[in-house]
Image 1 (cartoon, rainbow, N blue to C red):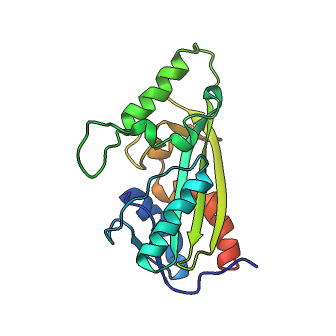
Image 2 (cartoon, rainbow, N blue to C red; image 1 turned 60 degrees about the vertical axis):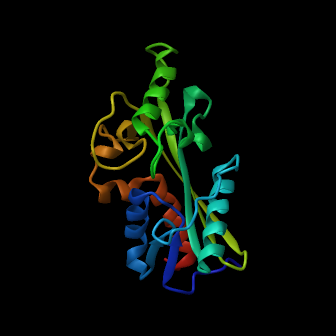
Amino acid sequence: MTRKLDGTKLVIATHNAGKLKEIGALLAPFGIECVSAGELGLPEPAETGTTFAENALLKAHAAAKAANLPALSDDSGLSVTALEGRPGVYTADWAERQWFEGPSGRDWYMAMGKVEGLLAEKGPEVDRSCWFSCTLAIAWPDGDEVVYEGRVNGTFSWPPRGTMGFGYDPVFVPEGRDVTFAQLDPAEKQAMSHRADAFAKLVAEQFDR
């Protein structure tokens, strides 16, 4: 039997303010108070996994043990069909700038440009289909864990469009739409995103909805 959240406070294992805001909004209707690992000053563990689930569990367990509270981690990424699923689990790594010193060394425009460059090399008829994956992991201080996975399909679009959202949102056009995630109202994006898909599964099991 899957373990249920039995408290109202949950650590979100992230230092990304955009991700915290999105996850917090999804959990707010269930009376869950979210605090980020960044706000608690918790270190970010090395993401050494080779799958989204492995990385999500690494982060969730580290935060749960450090804060002595249940922790929720999100590991997500963009996979491009013509690039054999890359960048996939290494999505954030493609945005790393080694020379940068500060709270975040990620340059998402650089990462989006890298994907576009690889697609352009394949010619104008290249398949631009792609998908966002999201794995949510909940871990408890005693070591228990549960995982939920979501996905949304779309097309990689260039140049980037929109100022809302974060990460690769400006180049991702979800199926059935002609605008990017970064052009959608945040509430509309949240309702159809890979994270929303994973959260729907979490809510159905954790809150019996």
